[in-house]
Image (cartoon, rainbow, N blue to C red; front, side):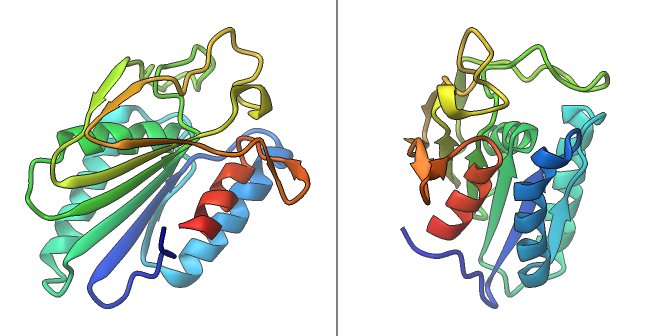
Amino acid sequence: MKKIQPGESSQLMAIIQWGGQQKALNGSVRLWNYLIGKFLYGFSNMIGMNVQKILQIIYIVKKNLIGNNSHLDSLWIIGHSLGGGVTSLFAEKWDREFPITIHSISAPLAGMDSRGPDCENISKKVYKISSAVSYTQWKTVHAQDGAFRNLKFDPQEVFIDGGTSILLPGKWKNSRLGHNRSIQWVSENL
């Protein structure tokens, strides 16, 4: 894998969810600060928004970003948790030839009951990724993921048709690699 280094001809969008406990904020905020310092667009605080609204926002930003920057030859989108679910739906719906790279990190793609009151349940068994999208699903070890480990099933277990699914290590830097730290691991290893 190569490091994420968008230059003059590529752009990165980050779609991350944070909210709830301060402990849950730490990993996301560090990545968010890293991304905002280096790149142009980002979405956050997605609790309470439904998937269709988020997809519309992404589409508008994508249209404006690509439409107003003719020098771009690619777009990278990184989504974490519910944001990873949104980016996965976006990867299925992409109908342009413009190349997009999407990384979905610790996302409950098979669905889960615990979500915000205004959030739709993203629940699928198969994701059919558009041929113009280079897609990677990064899964945490179910028993290590603080957001998923108490569920009877692993909400990350889906079939990715046209993409890659990678299981992250259970430990990283002598510590458990869970839901929030997965963002850091992926951002440091891309």
